[in-house]
Image: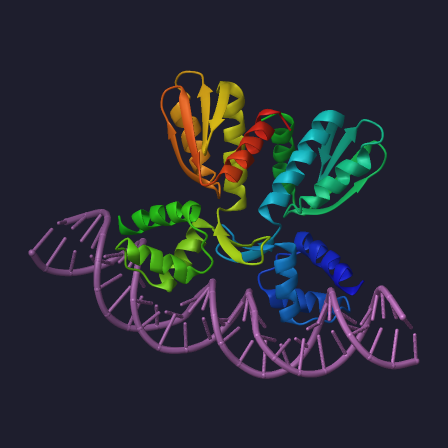
Length: 152
Length: 152
DNA sequence: TGAAGTCTTTCATATTTATGCAAAATAGCT
DNA sequence: AGCTATTTTGCATAAATATGAAAGACTTCA
């Protein structure tokens, strides 16, 4: 399955880099030894329903589809509320303790959110470690999580 | 204020028509006697952070920004949960009874969601009337509202 | 295996969108 | 009003994206 694999890569790129043009996908995929043309990327984007979002800072970047993002956030919220035990931060890390068994699920939801400033996520049985890209990002993420926890 | 007014029109068009290209905005605005070029629309879209979404049916259409949509849905949900009394449907109408004073707020939130298949919304002190574009749409809207009401 | 059908990709290009720059409009001052 | 600064717009065009058509892969079935 060539196409699916490529689309998985595209998803991963979405969260790790700020992608402004379809050609960026082409270059980045080339770097991972996946050879495609812009035409294919255009079709992938249509397939995956990605959108090109005008960002507040003036540029543009590709992002998850609205609906999926909303759905994911919903699940994330529910999981958080269900399983949350405690959290702590240090440096660029946010460490969340959850009820046993919920770590992996929560971690993968956080990943699926493709938060701009999250560098990586890791979940074991009852702990989720989120590594942010900066201290500011850590703060922001904390607030996001708190917002999710405090209902709405 | 020329620009702001135009952007209001753009917002209204967003919910009423399926807009596929920036030129569509140009024509539709021309029809309302607002003269603009595609260049301006492009800048408006950047300003307003609208996105061009690949729709499930194969085409593309412009739509609200992700974040705003999420925020609006959140407020809508909260308002619904806070103020909801009862609802009824008939033909293409959904009539929601709410606690006194909440009608206008709820109506404007429903409008802000720019639901594809909602024709119009009207809220008095304690009632909101939503007029859909088709019977199917009415059913769908009902489900959406129920989903919002039943937590998540 | 090979023919037929389906799916995917590229190439070339049409279509659409973004933007530099100059002109026009608008807003602040005095 | 008159002048200056700021914002907004259009024009022309560059840049980015989408897509028809042909070629290549991959399936399936006999």
